[in-house]
Amino acid sequence: MSISRYELVFTDVTGATQDVVVVERTLYKGSGGHPVYTDPTGIIRAEISDRGEVRVMPSGGHQDPAHAVRARALPEDDTEDDTGGDAEGPAGSGRAAPSA
Image (cartoon, rainbow, N blue to C red; front, side):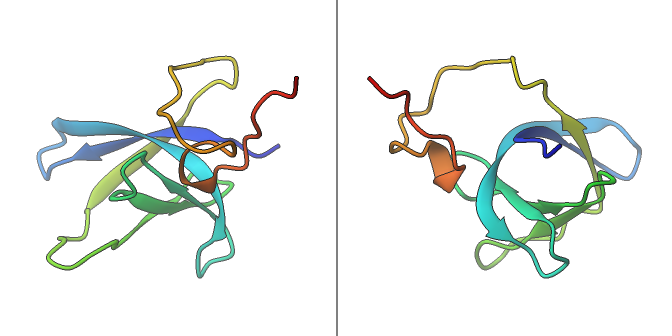
């Protein structure tokens, strides 16, 4: 079973939580062959393995690599307001719009 959404938890060197970002699965795969997930802005992109290993991918210049990132799977029935993406959902997540 593939997971369509994760929370990425970014922490600093002390282990204190700094930021939590929700990412959704895209149609792309990373260099490790695992799905690529992105936030609605497209700034945060990460390849997440089936074992929950996270590799944050740079999406532009001047980004510092994240040192400590955990992925927490979100339940499929946890629905949030759609971000207004196209019929496939945000960032090409593969979610189709309901048919009439």
